[in-house]
Length: 182
Image (cartoon, rainbow, N blue to C red; front, top):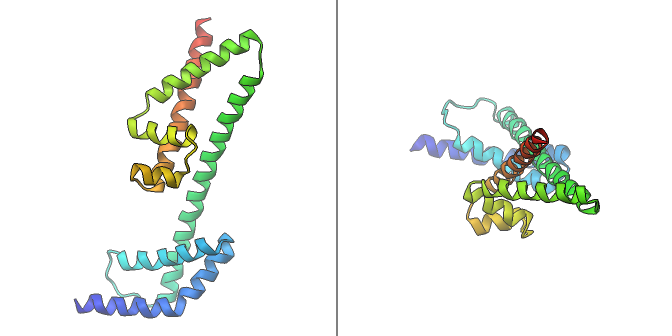
């Protein structure tokens, strides 16, 4: 118990002396003060929750090492989000392209593609399908979906990304099959 109290005191002192430095570190690299605050707090949360109880000799160096890892994770997460949105826009562009072409052959292709897309959505697991429909067709934000489904925003992002990928693969495979059948 005393070691827990001692650790808490060390973290408290380190928090007071380096929190501002960490915020500036993250602000410089993310360009967003809100993210900088959140990431700085994540550093201390990770320190508090670490399983290894060996004493930290150089607290500032240790905190900035954690900060580097937190920043890398933040960048990876943002890159995944950008990829999700890019896939979403590509799907939207494809649908828009097909709807503008009124040639009967194109209309039939478009209808077949929509049928495949409907089938793909129907084959999604229920929770993934619900998140995808709420996002794509009902226009809810990811935070609204998370609240409604009582799951984390991260889980909503995973459901949407997996649903988009599944639909793309399903439609592509179905179109390939139709082409081979002709």
